[in-house]
Image 1 (cartoon, rainbow, N blue to C red):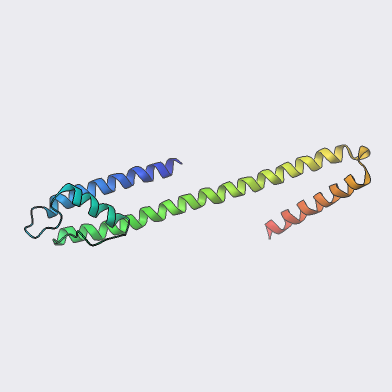
Image 2 (image 1 turned 120 degrees about the vertical axis):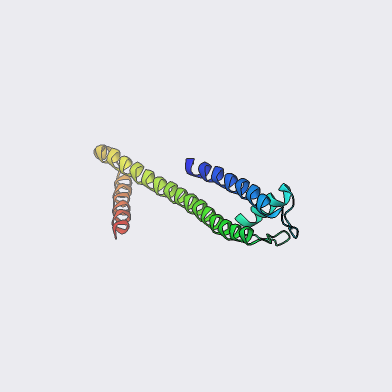
Length: 142
């Protein structure tokens, strides 16, 4: 979670810094389309998210170079976010699976300790649980 929050803060700083930077680069130019901070932040947001509407574009070489850099930074941020989110989801599924296996093992151990008092159908159920757990663990190692 800390990583995702850090990524959000970095994204805000990138958009804010790029917006101010592109404003300082472009606004003095006579043909500039980015003439105020609102346009600059709009351009930075559209560029970093790789949407790139094209309604406001830099006209100077330094502004266009900044746009190229911002596009790659945006792709990197989005890739890092998706990777972190995916890793978190996969990790939670693995943890859930391990918990289920652990609970099954605990139940089997408890039932084995009471085996003298179990009825036949309960013993059969216990045998099936052990077989299923064994198969599950064996297939996971392969």
